[in-house]
Image (cartoon, rainbow over all chains, first blue to last red; front, side, top):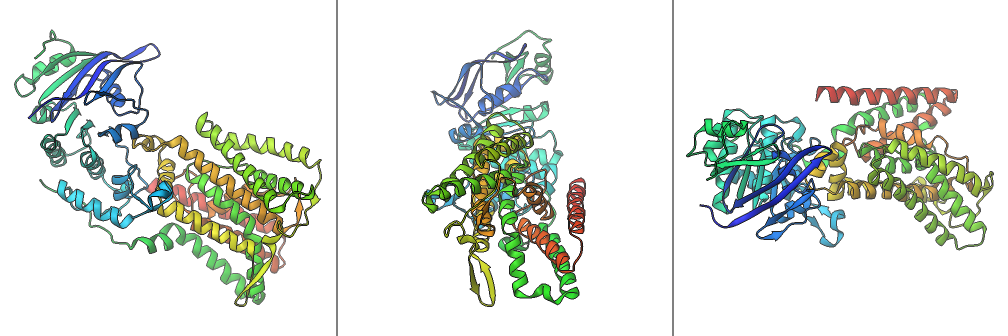
Length: 254
Length: 328
């Protein structure tokens, strides 16, 4: 299922004043791999994810995609490189409708030479969303409904669908099931599992060990801005994972 | 895989919903109500020449309010609207009275207004200063600069080209100025930009949440800059319209334009918190103010009451916006 390395982080360092968020983190992600990124609050998971998503610059260290060093100046750069992120606070625009949120930042306009001032084909976006959502199993969301009027689960569905539909290499999900009920969580996990078949890799941040065991091929544990160790959730026990997160057990590597 | 349960989808036809749109329905009713009252109480109100006067009286604030709408949609506010517009009239007037080509002078003055918008946008997006403070500062600087440039006083600007926007033409039985037509062209153009383009969608996105906009890869700073740049350009066109209305370059003119343009935007239903509202509301808002002033004047009522009624409308509009937010 997993192959060559798609994403590599080398010596990632980031500090905020006296607080070290990342103290030299190395991470590799294989093609088609589902990697769980675990750790207590403040362990550095979100900082690492923000760096890979292009919304935060590292003080030191490199991010390589397919062996090429990435220069990420914005979230747009990461998206164009094939990395999609579902942020914990969702990054949906409440005042826009479903289809607009789905295509935000990658709108097709006509004629091309007018660039962002060109005509936006809302009807085509609506049917595009319906088709894409249908193939992902999120059928009944009206493309013209304003997303601010929708439930947390529906908003999450749009955010996850956007990442899954457009990522060509890596999807990062930061607590994608935190706000969801059992059924909706199952749906998101189901979506995540389909990504490796398309050769897309996943980085999953979750506090829900049950979900991690269900979908992750491998788990990397961060503690105080460093890699504390790595485990195979399906093979190793949940107590082992938790012990590593808490720093109670000696680091093992697999 | 089961589908996420949702409420039944509501069908609205896209373009018509946007034009009639729920947000502009309230202001439209207010406009029609005032129109009805004035029409009943005074038969002269609906006379075509009176309606055409209302449009001419609305043209400057109506145009400046387009730029103000763009800025307010990004959750900003522009207090330099009037000053930038007056700057345009003074520069064009000075150049023409010094013997420069009128068209080039006007073009140059629009360019300067655009640059003023660019400067405001640069400070707001580059240094992340609050729009209120930046535009207040620019207002102060320009107020002083205008007095210096014009040596304190107003001066007449008699020129065929600069006054062209005040020329009239007949449309059926209706007499309109080229300036009024130009205003409607600007409304149509910016309406298109806001509602039918990627640029416009990103204006709304940034107005809703600059942070979320950044997370989805929108270049927020560059986009804000383009908004203030376009607003400055519109104020420059406003200067041309002002010269067509009154052939006079007066550093003390348009003192109330800031608040009047904000009034039009707010009465038109655009939220001061950004991200909600639109241009059709602003046009209606500007017309409400114009109709109110005209109707009350026709009725021979003390102008003080015009300000009072306008003030009440502003408070009602903002209160409605707040209430709808609390519900949502």
